[in-house]
Length: 323
Ligand SMILES: Cc1cc2nc3c(=O)[nH]c(=O)nc-3n(C[C@H](O)[C@H](O)[C@H](O)COP(=O)(O)O)c2cc1C
Image (cartoon, rainbow, N blue to C red; front, side, top):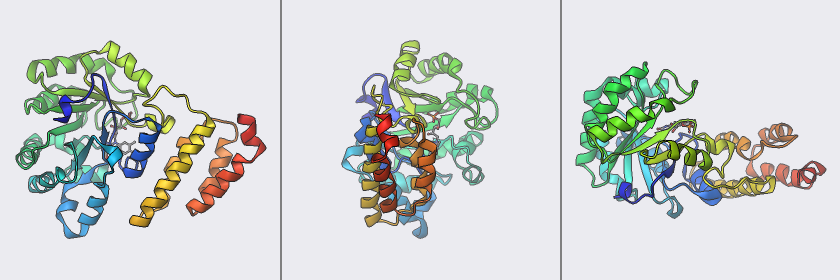
């Protein structure tokens, strides 16, 4: 079982919609991988419908460098959880994770993500249906509560009473979105709950963790936490799972690698160009002139044009002055 095979203080790349697809996971794998990957979330009802299945399957595409990887799924229809859960082992996943924390308005309106915090019986039924239809371990990722931090005193024990193999807690409420600091001060209380109710559950904390050095600091402070999940930290430094302080040349090399992978994937599936733009800042951010270069990149419409802008930059005096 994957959750028993991870090292102490394991690291995980957070599931991030529109970010942690198979291409970006391969980029992070090359930069320096975490112990565990998660997919971006897949809607169970899309998978259950003829119209949505193709998109769902694309989200669930994994490659050999992803392993071990957990499929994250969301929705509100227990039967659809059952259906998708029954397939994930054959797709090569090591586990499945139910999203009970997403704050997105549309997701919550559809009864999924953090809205599950308000419908515990339904959350329980979704966990049950997923479990009964797979041999894979079924974990949950959630927030402290929907509106108030105090909700965690009921919600987390409720989840722990399901004796999940792993529970990821994003240390904020749904209402707080990502606008306040993660509530590290609550970690001791959450550890106590876990130890009392379900000592076998691996506890993963998430929120504002920057990099591996930060993981080491937190693991010293909270040695009973099992795992540490990093999300937006990869935007600041895609090498954040390593001790590397990347040079601009290394960041550019990784950018070219990302473009190569993008091109290869775009030959296989319809892979839109626009979302690539979210990544420019990952590679081009830490030197004088970075924002001017990003403006030029934003104007490009193809990876060929992007490569040309990058090649010109590498031949420029601006680049040489950064060496
Ligand atoms: C662009 C983006 C997409 C996200 N998509 C998901 C998702 O699909 N599933 C999920 O559980 N959380 C998702 N999250 C939340 C992250 O997994 C994580 O909980 C959050 O960013 C806090 O961690 P961080 O401070 O390390 O970024 C997303 C966050 C971002 C920024």
